[in-house]
Length: 338
Image (cartoon, rainbow, N blue to C red; front, side, top):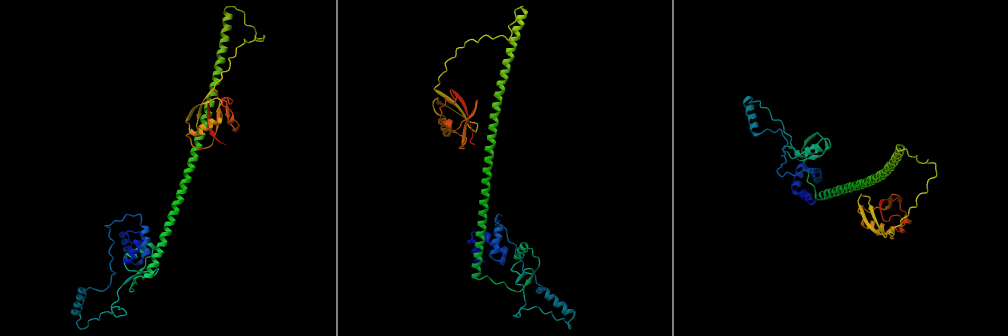
C-alpha cells in the first residue's frame, strides 16, 4: 500500500486523495486508483469522510456458545445415538478453508474487499460475484514500475487532450470575436451611409420647398398688382409676348481671393475633426493630417464631398484645395476604400 501511495503522490495527487482512492479501489491497483482520482478530480475532498469498513465475508461456522448449546441438546435428547458432525471443508494443509478473496464470475477478476467489488460493479455493470479461497499476490517491483509507466503515459495523454481542447476553444472564441467585430463594423458603416443619404435627401427637400415657397410669393405679388390696377382703372400690364426690356446691367463684384481653407472632416465613427489649411496646399496634406489624428481605426479610406457629390481620386491629391472647390470652407467625409 505504501509503495502505491508513493506512486500516486509522485504523480501530483495529495496524500489524502491518494489514500481515499486506494481504500476505494483496494487490490485493483494504482491504475484503478488513478482513474478514480481523475473521475472525482472536481469533487471537494471531505477530510471527515470515512470509507465504510469492509465486513469480512459471512461464513457458516457457528459460534462457541451456539455450538455448546447444540451439543448439550443433542446429548440430552439422544445420548446413545448422537449424530456425527458433518465434515468441514479443509484446505490442502488440512485446516478449514476460508474465503480469502472475492471473484467476479463474469470477467474472472479477484478482489480483496467488498468495497472493491462495489467499485467494480458500478464501473463494469457486473452483478455475479462469489467467494474464493485463493489469496491475491502482491505486485512485484517490476509490475509496479510497469504500472507506474502506464499511469504516467495515460496522464500525459489526458493532459495533451485537455491542452488541445483548450487551444481549439480559444481558436473558436477568437474566430467568433473577429466575426462579431466585422459585423459591427459593417453595420456601423451601413448606418453612417444611411444617415448621409437621409441628410442629402433632407437638404434636397428643403431646397425644393424653398423654391416652391418663393414661386408662390411671386405669384401672389403678381395677383396683388393686377387687383390694384383693376381697382384704380389703370392700364393693364403689357402682354408677356412683348419683347422684355433688357435686364439692367449688374455690376459683378470682384471675386475674393481666399488664402485659407477651413475644413470639417467627419470620420467613419461619427466624430469630427476641424482644421484650417492654406488654400494652396495639396489635398495630400489633408489626408496626412487625417491619418495622424483619426480616432476610428486604421482601415484604408477615401475622401468625398456631398455638395456637390464627388469622390476624390489619386489625381486629385496633388491639386491645391482652391482648385478642388474647397475654399473658403467645406465638409469632407471619410468612406471605406474600394
